[in-house]
Length: 271
Length: 291
Ligand SMILES: [Fe+2]
Image 1 (cartoon, protein in one colour):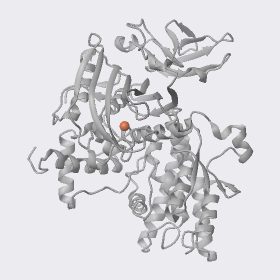
Image 2: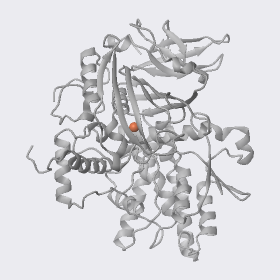
Image 3: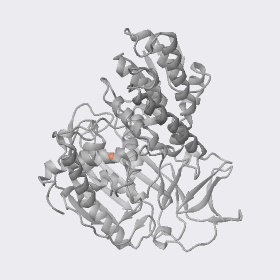
């Protein structure tokens, strides 16, 4: 199985992520999307006239569009049929949220790629649209939690979660903080704990807690880290508090733990 | 842009503003440098010129524009020195991988400080440039060269799980960091393919505004096995990891006044870089307020 792939593309990551969850072996065909625009080259247009990645080639069967590829992979390779449940209602619900991922969340990916490739706009209209989509998702996930469900379209993770996860977890790269979206943040955290989960640049794994510490010690380390202008300032950032994202907080915390171990300072030393 | 009082230190230096091949004969491109609008235009003979764009649309031609290393270099004032010498661009056994422009919403100085910081490898580039098991940063030297116009950190040794696209196994890799200007730095690191030779990673920051930057970068590597696109993905992954950390750092302008730091070895380059910037008189992109 071959995937025409670009490492920084959120849609390609959707496919890589499901392949990892399903433990299906595959080979990348790496495209120079930026700066080379390989996806518009004649040889690629011959494979996919729409000039878009990702594109999957499974033993001669070629299919494009991330959501269509997710449907194909789940139908073909998920023997337990959980990633795309087949009852009429559950399948329709998954499809509805796949549409949300490819439509409503697309502005987020566009804004992100513009920023990433140095084409930033002062007032990016896609960013405002992306925020509206995140608000819809936040409300939906809140409701799901109230009903006792933790996932977007079913009582277990489906390809709708996978498709929505990529652009959502990369929102900070599009200049939108997830700080004011607590239900999204909790769901992102649940996604990262699924067996087989993989990252891409901009998405960090669940904190590797070296020492099993409680929340009070964790926040003590964090505070010290911030008050001392952060021990590893280059990587953790000269964090002001509050106002840095949750992802940054988590990284600071991770690094603070490592620092405290390496430098043998006690997080309780009064500052 | 109307005439506003500009930073004389920033104006007298060279910046990369484009990859030469981006602008074809007869074409032009608009970009920004130091908060000013710039038009790059290549005539049908292939010569690239630049002009400053005023608010009323009038163009003022710039004279200090040079094409070198496949990049377009621009100085908006009177250049105080020659463009950085990187003879390795002409060595035929090297491959030049151009990473294109990557935008980062922060000051260029933040980008360079992150680039020269060894301590972030393990946390940000886990699995390639560092790992949780080898987070120690051993001692290294920091020194000024070329009449203190360049800052170097040398003899930096670091255990890297995958130091380059061509690396097969984890190795102890020797690094030299060269900071040529506040916005330009080159890493010289051991090649794992051509023993005794160095691979170069060059970072050329184009400061669009004080806290908005475009990073141009080239890798000059020895690699006989991997495709260009494979190497490109390797470097795009690494820089995108840096970028996701950089966009979180506050304040976006780099503070240069001494703060209450815990001095550690791995901070030596960062402290030297900040002091060097402070002494240079540069204002653009720096936070000079006292803590
Ligand atoms: Fe880095």
